[in-house]
Length: 93
Image (cartoon, rainbow, N blue to C red; front, top):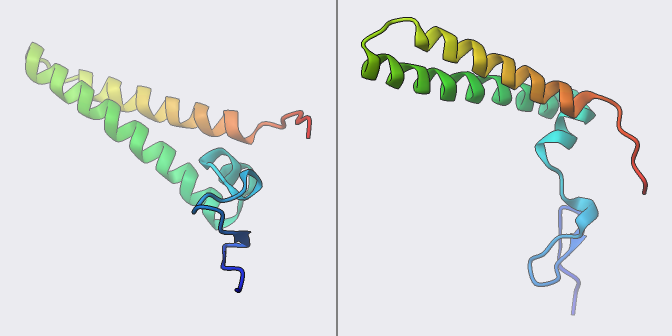
């Protein structure tokens, strides 16, 4: 029997090793193209989500400015998440 390998991890019930898993924070911290894409995703999704919330509140309340407030909050939240993932961390490994 041969050992089936995928992404450098041996298959054990389709569960990769814990060391092989990468989350969005790891991608941002490592930088490169994948880090840049994750930064962009944080900013776009945060801005889009909170803009949608602001748009719905605008429709509900009959105003036209809450959507801009939501976009600002979403962009700020996205930048804050990027900051949290890029700051140096003390890891006990």
